[in-house]
Length: 309
Length: 267
Picture 1 (cartoon, each protein chain N blue to C red):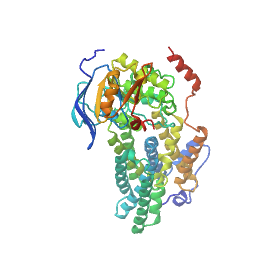
Picture 2 (cartoon, chains in turn brown, yellow; picture 1 turned 90 degrees about the horizontal axis):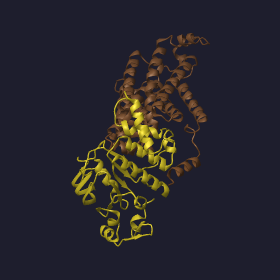
Picture 3 (tube, each protein chain N blue to C red; picture 1 turned 180 degrees about the horizontal axis):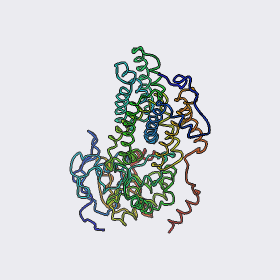
Picture 4 (tube, chains in turn brown, yellow; picture 1 turned 180 degrees about the vertical axis):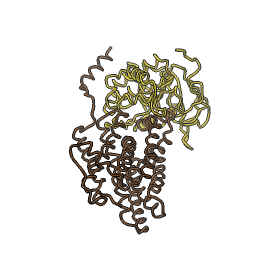
């Protein structure tokens, strides 16, 4: 499976200059690039939206593990003769449902999650070996293969991506309630247990999609980085969600564009852009951005004034 | 406001248990509408369990319980609930206002459509009622304990309940803030005709405002005016151990003899 431009079109000498319209034309000249942009955009949108909740719920590591479990699924699927995405979905969704059912008990289970994750990678390695296919199969799943994506896969990605975003919009408020204030949400009748499972299953679908773009190992770049940056700049959940999605799309577009001109893997560029943006965000907003707060003493004086008889 | 005269809570021979573990039993009491009841008792005696029963999160192990004329059920919109607080993450990227908003539409599915202005007005109203407008737009994790408590109270009020269940709202507040918050709850309850069940460790900040005390200890429940329940005789019988209640010149009450029970209270 080709993963760099040089392998695909060794003789191409693409235009690159200040004429943005022509740049865009150049970028979308080939069908494989159009497919990459289409699938990449959909994947980034759903990754950014669900990523906001992943970070808010403290499930970054679980999301990471989910993608590794997907590796065993994807390679296993190839071994039994179906497409990787089927195996990815089956494995991540089942694992997601189990993690969701564990809910709060999942927190602090780093060791267990890590072991399952390592074992899944090992299993995937075995499946790859048993398949006796080229190492490119494993490389493609581990690091993404967005330039090899077919029109059918684009369509499937579009359906899956729309479903995840739609599902998240449907559960948005109760999920936010359950995330921020589980006890009150439960008392108010929010099905917190069911939502926890539903969320992890939606995440499993989003992760399986994202694996096509950045692969199992680089998933953090699309699911966690944009959300983590967004949460430094806004204290409003709706804006955080939006900003996270926009950032994920920008990272993907930028990564794809650079990879078109420079003969190195797109996964490298997307993760690099995500990483540098995160560093930049930390420098610009070293801590959560707050509206300027009046001094504690002023507040204390006000309180005193309010309550003195 | 039309206030119903039927009791807010009626318990008859009520028992609470987690699985096989009996927490308390044989509790019979009535709470009247608009009444302010402090729930007292040592840790692990089942005070929060009582709230869980009223909320419908735990079914009675025996006996009957009526809440606002119905059997308790989860998701009762007529009950505002503020659970015991763990610490809110300082970096939680959410404003106090967003917490309050969840009290209005946090249970609704789908994206908000229609009258956003109306729900914003209700959020402002609730925040104004607890005097928290000055800091409602800051990240909630950055606020002081008292400020957070006000906003969580606003969240409970935003749903326009008829009953408030507050689990240790005064814990981890300094003495002055304990009195301020207790008075605020009392003021709001009277203004809105709310029935209040408030769990506390110390009766003293509540003495000026409570109507009655519900004492949960050693598998039993007793209710009455503070001066009736918090007495040497009553508590000694409830605990089945020698307890002494002392009063200072200001009427403050001190329960002596519970040291073994209360040693781990404030940890």
